Image (cartoon, rainbow, N blue to C red; front, side, top):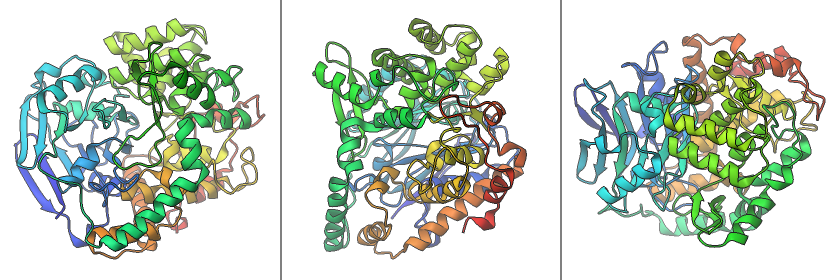
Length: 573
């Protein structure tokens, strides 16, 4: 049996509700957005008592099926003021599934939120324990403390020092298989929401449980073997991701002109070959030691797109070093050195902030003249200020939009208050449509179009439609609790339905999954409309509509009527 856990932090009341038959398929982003829409007033202050925060997994969490243990955290975002789902890999959702938990929802604020607590969950129940010894430590030290206290079998979702100061880009750090705080629900500032509830960490201990076993072993083995063969024979999942990880996108961005350079002033970077996937793989391999060019972030993952970046002596520095961080903390800052980018990544992780948002905010600060682009020491110093929560550090930690307002910068790469990921939308116009219209704000994972069937990524023709198809398509994977990278090898959801049947003896079809995704997108849009978002907000910041990317000679010029049509709910079907 799978259950939803509800905890009222003000009254101390706890309740466990079995997942109903009608909602049995619903998980991940579909479940988190449903909970937020039903239980949070649209006008609620994200850090106030009427917001909630929920941790949700998918229907196949707790199994060792590849890519099936993604965690979705939902709340109203303090960064955007909109509904938000932020997801990550790691072991947390896997352990939720082993304990038969589909969601953990925290309501209310305790009488004394400064009395920091740890929520400890195991097979015997839920327990609140003192978390004061975690306060002010960085995420890496907190992980050590939690592992020493509770053992190596745990997983955790925790805040860093940035969240303790309620910085609007504060993330939630999630443990990887080595209990490193390496996976992040980074976007939207949800770490600040968890901190406002007085929670330092949620610790899950699956001791005494086992991975879920299929009820129909033959169907499971047949289907799982077919999926494994597809993953192991598709070049994207079997070769590119495993060798280069997401850093393979550096060369694609350079070729198409969407690689951010100097606060998104350009779309190509003169030092791109020093920070691309090949350079990263070569550097990791040359240093040896504990560095890894391929690494699985969750149990059972066959794609293994993660990596472990080592110091010069081979000891680990940070895991993983991904394209988004390379783009935002590298080329976006004019920095072409992987060691510097990795150190910036480490400082962001230790602070507990989103590397995308922090990199974009530092880019804005450099645009304001506070440092020269390419100045590695200045960038590292700014991240140290975030870690130390100085006044300037809090400005950077509040995200690119707020940093631009404080520093008087017009050229700010945001939509709905959230920073662009590492894709200049003037050169990848399907993502321009996604950034503008997604309920999540600027978020490539909400509707990536790099592999969409369009004739020219630089032309607006067909891009709104590509975004629509992708927004629904990726939401299907999010709603199932899967990493959508599996979609490169397994585009047909029929096999996923077979796996669900093998484990749960319940029959679903791809159309039901698609309908769930469409319903979720509609729910999210309606929440945002009730929160005051209108068609005026379905745009990028003004600069990108009127100033060309000089490497592609393009602006964001998708016609307003096409954006309007994209936002019509009846067009989603």
